[in-house]
Image 1 (cartoon, rainbow, N blue to C red):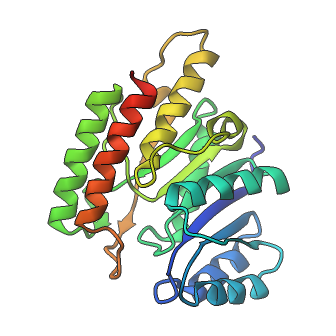
Image 2 (spheres, rainbow, N blue to C red):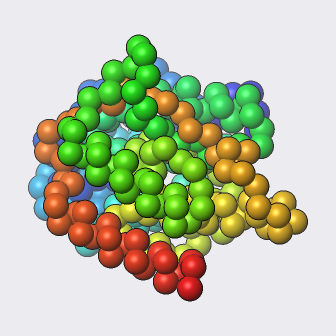
Length: 254
């Protein structure tokens, strides 16, 4: 990778009209010519597409839109977006960032810097660790459920990751084509499936020897994470996560 990375992130959007902060996106794009943002409108039923179009009109060179006719779920929206970026552009780093900007867009550059510092790293994923000087605002129930979920995932699939579900992740674009070639079997917790798939690619690249995850995956403690109102994560979402978990066991372990 060059010293100045070109970075592209997918921002999946489903009924985000009220939470999509157009001015923040436009400002970040104007200040950072190396950044491209692809908004994937995942079959929204409100005016999300109108807000996205306003951002794209203000930044035609660096703001892109892919509109899906039907809601396909966050995982498929991210996958389709990454495929689009691989086909249309030549980016060093491709990832995804949650539309609510619970993690500020400005932190993208801290993530991208890790790829320069650690050439073997294939992915940098955000982690909402409570460190001194970091502003992490999480609802206690969601925090404990997240910790339980991450622990179960790690024990089941044999990796050690503190936070699997933070919606801020970047990857070396060169490793992505085989990783996202086929749809995820998980609709909601596709983040885990991404990590499983990349770990298998790393295994093959290391002559069929397993590598400890921290040699190819870097957990970046985010400086700020705010609980944004209007989240779509409900009790039914946790039920979906259980079904996703069972689907991944069938696909990758049985």
